[in-house]
Image 1 (cartoon, rainbow, N blue to C red):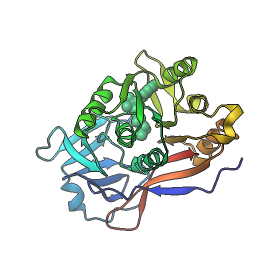
Image 2 (cartoon, protein in one colour):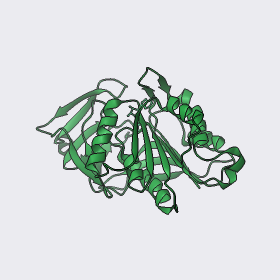
Image 3 (tube, rainbow, N blue to C red):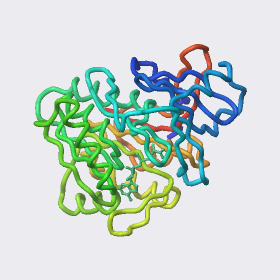
Length: 302
Ligand SMILES: C[S@@+](CC[C@H](N)C(=O)[O-])C[C@H]1O[C@@H](n2cnc3c(N)ncnc32)[C@H](O)[C@@H]1O
């Protein structure tokens, strides 16, 4: 199966997040009321905003190494967390030691896609598995669209933030299982237990560790994990033609083309009815027509 033509998904549905400028290996963002400068290796071009806008940011992140770690320099007081809104969801942003602000705004294109599928489905209680779920926004987007969600992440701290977000979003009663585990080990166990899901979301890092020291390496593990996710979706070989479900995979910061991800996923799902979209995710600039590439993706629904 040939991969479809690539599509750029631009996350242009934010009120509380704006990419103000990028260039010289950095980006200037407004997140709620605060301005941040963070490294951005894709921004090879020159910035367009005046230097004073960059210099006046509330916090500037300086990387220490290639491992995303580094240190924040704060110009004045910043609260430890602040509330943001996307669509009808409220959640918390905060500066983390790994340069992130506890959410990835470009992912809103996939939250919307998952919600559309969930809301368009008639009857039953769809079940969604969110792997490498981080601070839980995809889980909350799916839960608020009526799904039972299983959220898996290896970090207790990230799950703690995700639970805070569940409260903030007013979804304390929503059926979400928070599981601290290694993603691949969990998926294999679910297969042995005969569990099945209607939707799977996968946002693996380049490198990570499970809570028991399991090593996750994207290039070595992705094909096996996608294959296992395909088994967990109700896409059994005998009934692939009539499959109903969705699958979303994103990949950051590795030297992989969207075609590599797309063809790996299409191979695992071979024969499944449904529609694929593949390509790049990007953020629009608030004040000019450029878009900033952030990740590659492959997604499927039927
Ligand atoms: C959201 S992903 C990162 C993907 C991201 N968009 C990026 O920039 O690479 C990071 C999450 O994966 C989790 N993680 C790392 N290794 C893991 C593993 N082996 N099993 C489950 N979760 C893991 C981390 O705790 C973190 O919350």
